[in-house]
Every structure is written in C-alpha cells, then in structure tokens.
Image 1 (tube, helix red, strand yellow):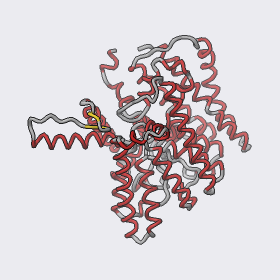
Image 2 (cartoon, rainbow, N blue to C red; image 1 turned 30 degrees about the vertical axis):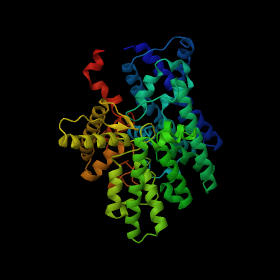
Image 3 (tube, rainbow, N blue to C red; image 1 turned 180 degrees about the horizontal axis):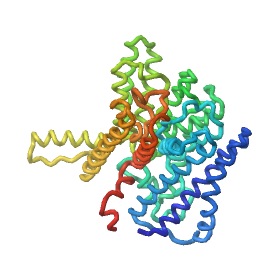
Image 4 (tube, one colour; image 1 turned 90 degrees about the vertical axis):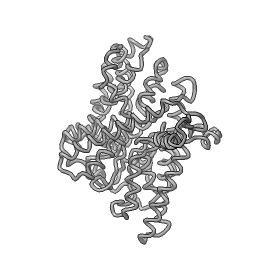
Amino acid sequence: MRWAVVFRVLLLLLGVFALTMVIPLVIALVYGEGDMIRPFLAPMALVLIPVLPVAILTWKWPIRFSASDGFLLVFLAWVLICLLGAVPYYFSGRIPRWADAVFESASGFTTTGATVLADVEIMPRSLLFWRAMTHWLGGMGIVVLTVALLPLLGVGGFQLVKAETTGPEKEKITPKITETAKILWFLYLILTALETLLLRICGMDWFDAVTHSFSTIATGGFSTRNNSIAAYNSPGIEGICTVFMLLSGFNFSLLYRLFRGKYRDILNNSEAKAYGAIVLVSAGVIALSLFSGAASLGDAVGKAFFHTATIITTTGFAAADHNRWPPLAQGVLFFLMFIGGCSGSTAGGVKVIRYVVLGKQAGNEMRRLLYPKGVFTIRLNKKVGRKDAVYGVAGFVFLYLFLALITTLIVSTAGGDMFSSLNTALMALGNIGLGLGGTGPGVVFDGLPGYVKWVLSLVMIAGRLELWTAFVFFSRDYWRQ
C-alpha cells in the first residue's frame, strides 16, 4: 500500500470538492443570507489550508497506484466527502444533530434522495442549492470530476474511475481516461443545461429549474418543494422530468455514441433493449391498473411513465401518492426497486445488465438439462460474453440481497413493521430514496434512531460504490498485498 500516494491524492480530491462550495457561498451572498456564509466558508478553509501547500510542493511528483490503492482511495474519499458535506447543514443549525446532517449529506452525494427535513420550503436558498448540488456532484462522481480536472491523475486514474463508476463493465470512450472523464462531464453538463431551459419554459423559476435539473440528471430526487414534482401540478414538467430521468438512467457511453450518430450500437446493445422493454411493459401495466381505477387515460399514462422512471432510475421524485394506487401498480413499483438503471449511468440499484446476464444463464441451464453434453455460452451485444461475467454477477446479487436482509433487520430494531424496514433497506442500498408504505412520498426519516441513520449512511455509500469497493476491505487477501 502506497500510503503517501493515497494521502496525497485524497487531499487533492477533497480540495476539488471544497472548491465546489464557492457556488452555494455565492448563492448565499446573492440572496442576502449572511448567516450561511460561515457554514460554507468554514469547511472550505478546513480543507484548503492543508491542501494548497501539499498541492504546490508535490505538483510534479508522479502518481502511480495499484487497484488496491484505488479501492481504498475512493472509499475514503466518499466517506470524508459525505462527512465534510454535512458541515453546512450542521453549522447553519438547520439540522442540529450530527447524525441527521451526515444522513442528509450521504443521501445527497449517493443520489439517494431520502431526507430528514420535514419542511424544505423554509430552508435558505443556498442550503437548498447545496442539497441539489450534492446530487449533481455525486451523480457523475467526485473522482471522475477530479480525473477530468487533474490530468496528472491520468496514470492510474482508470483504477479510481473503475472503483467509482456503476455496472459490471467499465469502459473508456477514448484511450485516455482523462479525455473519457471530460467527455462524460461535458455530456452531463449539456443534459443539465437542456433540462433547465425546458423546465424554465414550462413555468419553473430559474432557481427551481436548476436545482431540479441537478436532481433529475443525477437521478437523486431532492426537491425544493415539500410535495416534490406534484407541487407544480404540471403535466409538462412531469413529462420533461420523465424523459430526462430515463436518459440519465441510460448508459452515458451509449448516449455519447447516440449523439455521434452510432445508432447501431444502441440497437445491438442487450442492456439497452432490456431497459426499454422493462420501462414500456411496467408503465403499460401501471397505466392499465390506474385507468381501471377511474383515472383518465392521459393522466394514467403520464403518472405511470413518471413513476416507472423515478423508481427504475432510482431518482425518487413523486408526482402522486402511489401508496393510494391499486395493489397491482404498487407491486410493479416494488418489483422495479430490485432492478435499477443501466450500467454506466447515474442510476443506482442492481442494474439491468446483471439481470440480462442471469436471465441468459438461466436459459443455458435449461438447455443443459435437455442437452447434457452441449456447450453453451451467453451472448451480450450480439457477441459471446465472458465466462466469468456470470460468476461476478451472481456474487454481486448475493452480496446485494444479503446486505439488504441485514439492513432490514437493523432498521426493524427501531420498531417499524417488516415491510417498511425492507423498503427502507432497499431505498438506501439501491439509492432510490422512495419506496412503498412507510417510505412512500412525503416521508421523512428524522424519527429514526441515530445508530440506524449511521448504518443507512454507510449502506448508501456502499450502494453507490456498487458494494465491491466497500466490501473488498473485509477480504484477508486485500491486506496481504
């Protein structure tokens, strides 16, 4: 373990993060929120004072690290960033308990969207902007941003990006990881700007348009309104959010190829086709269920697609109280909580590609019963898939379900019913922020005991880092290196 390199890069990551607090600090000045200057200025100074001399003195030193170094770096970076991001909430006095402030910060950066704030509309504008901004920074990833801004991390930078990005397959759009990071962030910026403009045209003011775009593109779910998107009562706003949620739940590398006119890459992609099919079928079943319950066809279709998008992409916005929907519609949403978006997206969850792999392998096992001597392989994207892909996916799904069970048991010690405890566990692990029953629209988590909030905060981070980056430290082989 190269501890000096780990410490140095960790400081650089925290330094980049601290600089982002300049933006909400400016927002506080613009809106005359003088009491919010110290809560943002203090953590910036706390980080930048030690970071600047280290960065200046070691600027030309080479940075090289192994995969094991990268795992430790990314995990420590996310834990420290969530702790540091909680300081503005705590210092401002708006969230007076430290466990609550860390929960809100972790929920923001991991794009979960669960909150301890019962009334967000009374919060200072700068703090609301910071909440949404934590989504936006965490959605694409603090490490990916740092790799894009600091080319000196190009050597070994791919190890960091691999440990942070979602999905079983990690790919580079270009040979250089720094160029890949820049392309991803540029695409991220374009989508954010486009949605902001469209939301402004549909009636949101600029502040709400920007903050909701941050939450949508990051598939986070924090809103500036207590009733989330339902507060606007606008089919246009709901439609725009639906489209951009679905785009953000899609593989960003494929989106980049789509914008370059490489449509065949989309048509040949197994995960893309499965993602589209799941969305269409789920929304269709929910729409039929709502329409049979006396809703108008247009309203049923709109709400069905919106809530299908918000759950499968793990965004967590709400346009209606789905706890009052028919059981079939709720059942579909509960099913979607186990799926998640595409690999390489800002969405959480298990990811569609893993179910595609398991589904194809299940088909192979049935063929093997009929043809015991046959040799069968899975095909992904019209190519023969790697044999070890199935083992990796199976291991991930086992770990995911095991952690969901353990988290459910811990949450249940707070006195809630088992179904709500399971929904809370899935909400945190899948970074969804919205569930059924006791975790439905409008529910806040301030009533949970402090120890449960600490556990959920760690589970949210583990879910955002796709478990392996957080659990590799429990392996004796890791520490033997």
